[in-house]
Amino acid sequence: NTHDKTFISILNKKVRNAKIIKKARGIGLPFDALKLETFDDIDGSNYAAKELVRLYFTNSWSDYLSDHVNQRQIVKEFCRFINMPFDHAIHLFAKDLCSSEVVDPSILARAHDLVSLCSKPEIKCDITLRFLQQAQLSSTKPASLKLLANEVIHWATNEELRSKL
Image (cartoon, rainbow, N blue to C red):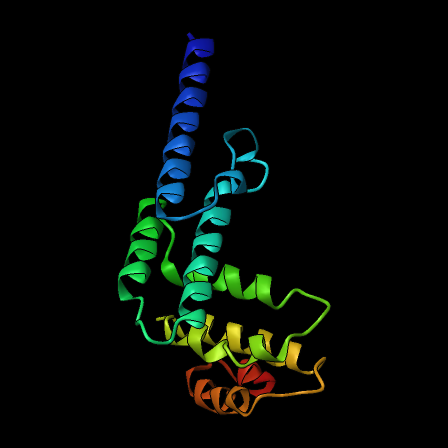
């Protein structure tokens, strides 16, 4: 019967969402950051991946003595678990960083960290472009951002993107 199939489909989706939440919390996502009741409303898989990438970068930026390879690998495994490319999770985090009205020059200086972990040229270019656009709003422009722009211009897939960079 159609009603039973619909119920089973909804139940399977809730179980899958609960597994994603449990796994994300096991990696370090705060308990109150993601709940089953609001999972679909906030695109929970994307949100969890973005926040785990944020957690990874926050930890790596605050502790230069460690390379955090293990934590990065765990976040990559989570992304595989939810069928999301790691590049996409980094891209979501970069969009979030660059959406603020207030520009933090120390964040602008971190653009290379994000780009260096991406494998897809178009994502590297988009992240760099977002940071460059944010830099236009800042009185302080880190030299590392200009160097990054010069580096990624070679990865630009079309002339329009090259000219923007």
